[in-house]
Amino acid sequence: MVQFEAPAGHQPGRRRPTFPATTDAERSDDRSVMARQGRWATWWRGGGPVTVAFLVPMLLAFGLFSWWPIVRTAVMAFQQTNLVEPAHWVGFANFRHVLTDPLLPTALRNTAIFAGLAFLFGYPIPLLLAIAMSDLRRMRGLFAVLAYLPVVVPPAVAVLLWQFFYDASGGGVFNTVLGWFGLGPVPWLVSSHWVLPSLVLEATWAAAGGTVIIYLAALTTVPKELYDAAQVDGAGIWRKLVHVTLPHLRTIMLVTLILQIIGTAQVFLEPYLFTDGGPDNASLTVLLLIYNYAFGSTTGGGDYGDATALSLLLAVGLAVLSWVYFRLTRSWSDS
Image (cartoon, rainbow, N blue to C red; front, side, top):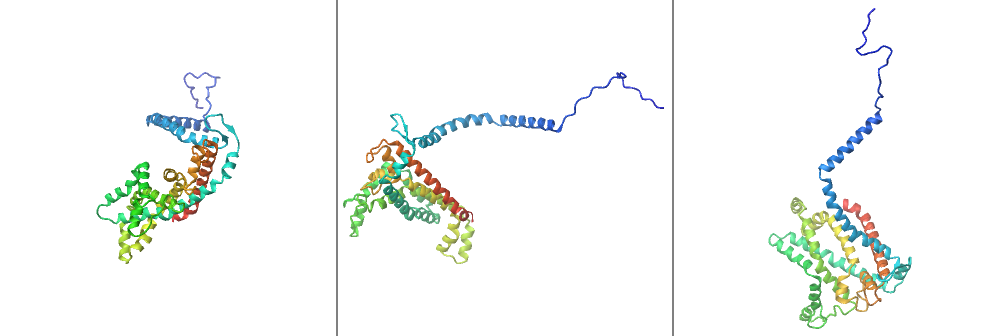
């Protein structure tokens, strides 16, 4: 019979020590810990602390000057306060007062008329100017600069300039030109019928340059081969515009349209600087009414609760309008 020798150091009758086997769960936990440590090390070596050091001050500044005013506006909408005396909670009283204000329908009507006129005249003009300038072979940059120049003119200077143009007497620039053809004088800013078209004309002149630059940049993305193919097929200028240019500008046009709607719904500068809402509230807009609640003399001023309540209603209304707009135009913009 073959006999096996016992290993060195083995003592008969004594069992060798055993160690518990590592389970799959423990091995998985170890791998998770090592992976987390590896990610932290990679983040640290990749400049993570430096990124946080730059990001935190920006977030603090953004929260202080952007988010905090929004929160304060939402709170003040339910308070009666003049920012001097202690505020008192009044619930929805500010909203009821704003919604029953007889000036609110007038402001809404004037704002809607301003937005409609701006859509009819102010929306297509930048597009047509951009298309016309894109076809120029020489001095395209000069015309782009001239188109953008009104944007950089200070509003106060622009108002003084256009007040001289709109002078209702025979000495005004526009009335002088109309007089050459036996027309006028037109009471531009002193007539309730002419004041809103006059403001739309100046607002279009002041803001169209930025939109022209956007359209010019978008037109550079239209392939030239499509224009060549359309010309071979005998397409004229109109058919090239309808079947080549506009389809490629569809997304940009949708974005500029909603931006214009939002901007005209918040029109304030022109009515405030030119007419202060006159004559007879013919140019009173929603944002000017908000200003009058807080600072103006026509409504007493100092009523920041009503001002913030109307501001909140305007913001919610524009948010809902934007959501509906993008829902309705989603399929058209993607097609």
